[in-house]
Amino acid sequence: MQEKILNTLFNLFDITNRLDVLYKEEFGDILTNYTYTEMHTIDAIGKIENPNVTKIALALNLTKAGISKIIKKLTEKNAVFVYKSPDNKKETYYKLTKKGKEVFDKHLKMHKNWCEQDKILFKQFNKKELETTYKVLDKYSKSLQKRLENIKDSLK
Image 1 (cartoon, rainbow, N blue to C red):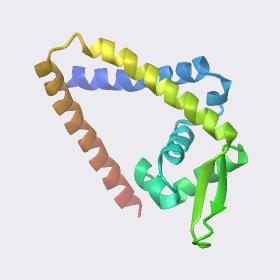
Image 2 (tube, helix red, strand yellow; image 1 turned 90 degrees about the vertical axis):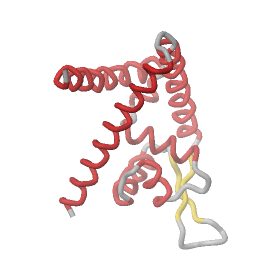
Image 3 (tube, one colour; image 1 turned 45 degrees about the vertical axis):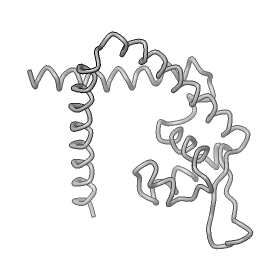
Image 4 (tube, one colour; image 1 turned 180 degrees about the horizontal axis):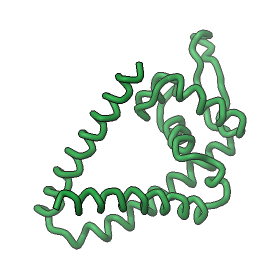
């Protein structure tokens, strides 16, 4: 049974990735120009108050160096601009450009559409089934997170 579950999870990850590509196409060409991580960085910048490297890295569970590289790419794509606060000239902040806001809005719409379809699916399950599924997926997610942290630690 464990093998069936793992195969189903791997299949789920694969289908999710393929759906992500199709949703990008469905919601406009603008989204196809951005990677998964770039879109989620744009999303974080659009949602976080006074976003800086540290806040974005924490929100996305990525390194500050990784975020800096992504920000550089997003700046080159004219989706984000960099600014300094008049109160604190040392701290660098980020804001979405008009193009970045368009990506943010379309990405948000894509997620909303995805969630609406999921709600319809989940209505066919009773509360106990959903609670059990949540417990299993939550524990699996935490296990994957732990593996990720172990790999990061071993690379240091």
